[in-house]
Image: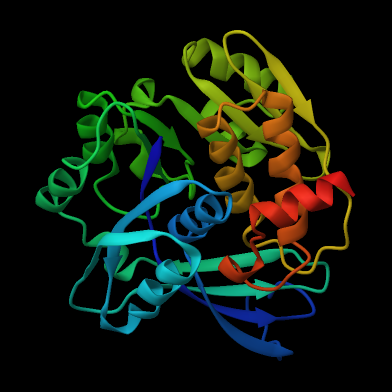
Length: 295
């Protein structure tokens, strides 16, 4: 089973700070590092490192050719990444002393997808494949509609959650990958069980993967509900934690593993990622994750 990820590619400018800056405040930073990121790129690299055949679709500017090098390094198929005029997407990320982050996102080339481009990319995939999406590229409703027509399984990470998602036919989504905040934004419910119940009522045939931060994660479908606690570690940078979990979760599904094993592997991979700086470089390979689980 192949995964097509039509998603963002961002250059991350990461600043270490004592605390997330307040309105009107000026704060000196401890350091600045530049990493490759974007929820799309992060998740594609997590999928590849987890052993999945993954193809990335998206746009970069002339300043983004390092993404092509990274795809080759990590094993992501890059033939559908297109270079367009203008700058690549980028983020300004603050990481405080408690490893919490605040992210300012500029869309750049990520907002230049066209219907012709989407049709061309989707023509190479069929109902045996999974389409992974986030909300950092344009034309999301069109992508969902066209992939649904082809019978593809559609996995959606509705992040960042904003009004653009209102135009997406959520009943066409096969797999929801969301955190507790996005769960509240989608359902209006704050308690975990209430979020799950509302999602099950709204999308009875969908698979739901809800991450709960320090409280772990829970998976629900028509037949089962499975809980996974976190692996406690000293976090350094939580930027790619959710994306790592997403990549390993879909890898486990693609391999047909029991859900308990899927969640345990995903949680362990995420716990390793948060002990390292950066987004893509922090994501562990599957062999390392399995070795850590055995240990």
